[in-house]
Length: 214
Ligand SMILES: [Zn+2]
Image (tube, rainbow, N blue to C red; front, side):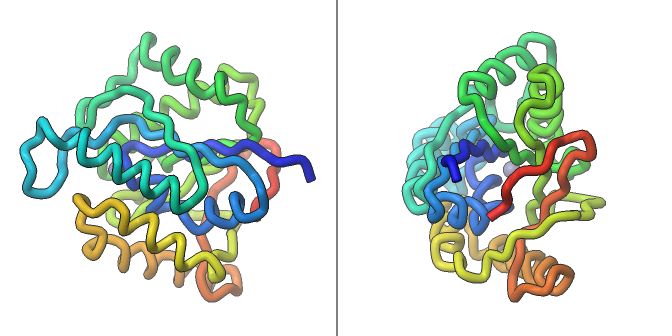
């Protein structure tokens, strides 16, 4: 199989890892190329440190997570908590996506408690439509924020627990001990639905072509 290029887009450093780290590790383990595309550098929160230091704290955390997952980080240049969805930013985001020429794009589900996640989802959908629906498009879920999500495809991530956990815990400033166990509850539940010990669940856009899931 020819190596695929896969983009996993997220509102903040840590979102692609939270929702998809097991699937990412399985893809890269099979020799596929994965890019983690972060809408911003997490300027809005980094534990107790002053906000003007957050980007410089969270960028290396994201880079460390990507090293663990054998993925490549790309930052879309927006600001945490102040996501802009207008003509200019739709175009800028679409340019980033099309420059990478992905075979598959994963993005956050649009019904979500965090504005940045909703924005990221809309930016991705618009770029996908503009591309003529060229890559396959799948949605993912993250603990605490995603609402009303019903996956229809699953990836068995039981063999990827170690890199998955390490990539999430690379986001030290985000206190992963508070949210990682909740994501594991989700993947156990998705596992029950799909017949695996643990699974990440995805919703393929109904107008998207099917793609290889690992
Ligand atoms: Zn987020």
